Amino acid sequence: MKTSTITQQGFPAVAPESAAVLILGSFPGVASLEKKRYYAHPRNGFWAIMAQLLDFDPDSPYRERLEILKENRIALWDVLYRCRRSGSLDSSIEPDSVAVNDFASFFREQRKLKAILFNGARAETEFKKRVVLPERLAAAQNGICCIRLPSTSPAMASLSMKQKAERWRILQDYLDL
Image 1 (cartoon, rainbow, N blue to C red):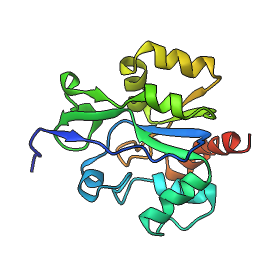
Image 2 (image 1 turned 60 degrees about the horizontal axis):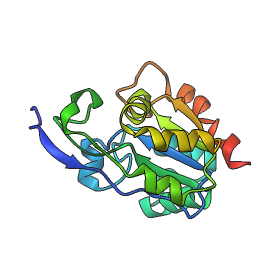
Image 3 (image 1 turned 90 degrees about the vertical axis):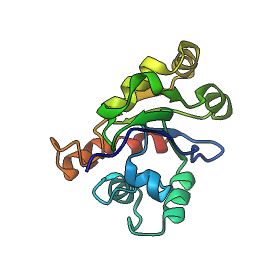
Image 4 (image 1 turned 120 degrees about the vertical axis):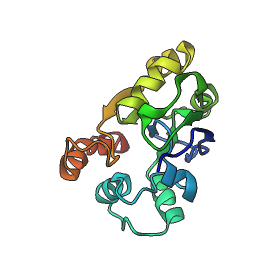
């Protein structure tokens, strides 16, 4: 059954007062939008990887998982605020329907940010393409590293979960600063 194309809106940022790392996805999938939770698809590896890196139970309640991210100075957000698409695949996003989140305000508030970790290629591409130049320059001038990591989505199947987790281990380097 094909999902109809509708305009969808993402979630607000989950961010502690002084985040060291911002993890950016592209836009929530259908399962996440339905459950109103980041990375809610049962086969998405995001929470399993975070649990492994931060030493918590990946099946703990959602609010507890968010608190653990914040306690570890990790912010979570998506590049896109709103878009139209059919289904969950990033490739289904209609380019003319896209609106990005307010990164200018986010960067003004998050002065201790050391890294932006992109959850997959599409997040990085959309950020570089759609986030206006002054915000990107501000990030670069503040010494914020931008790193694309393999998507935790089950649609990105060229790497095993173990391989993805190993690449995501770089997160810890920015938490120890």
